[in-house]
Length: 189
Image (cartoon, rainbow, N blue to C red):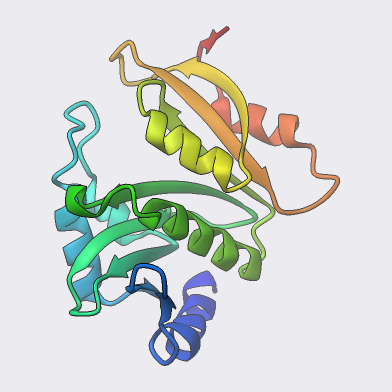
């Protein structure tokens, strides 16, 4: 159902009315087009994240992917709402090509994902960020996310991972939802 709604949304808004950031002339669109997803996966594969390589199958099942492109059509950034269904959704797969960083691209990719999530009926967005990833933490906070808690990574890397959320519905019991997502992870104070 979400893919069908997204398909209608993309056909109407993204393909006909691609949003352009006038300050930087970058084009942002929500896409499920195979060529866009492959280009985004190729960009994500360049991440310096040996402990967490991209799972291509999971990425291609994302609820939706937002890409940033130059006016010439070169992909310079991407981000997604990860695979899944329901009213709770995980943000992830944010990457901006190094040559285009510090221009507001990551912030705009996050804004676009939040807006689509609202339209799709998502009630809570959440994300995890490794402690050393200062840029991603700042990006989430600038976009209205709240820091929740730190936990040890479940990958056995020793990394501390911060958990962030954005409630899109008033009255939601955020602590209960976040507790259900965290599971048996070890909290770091």
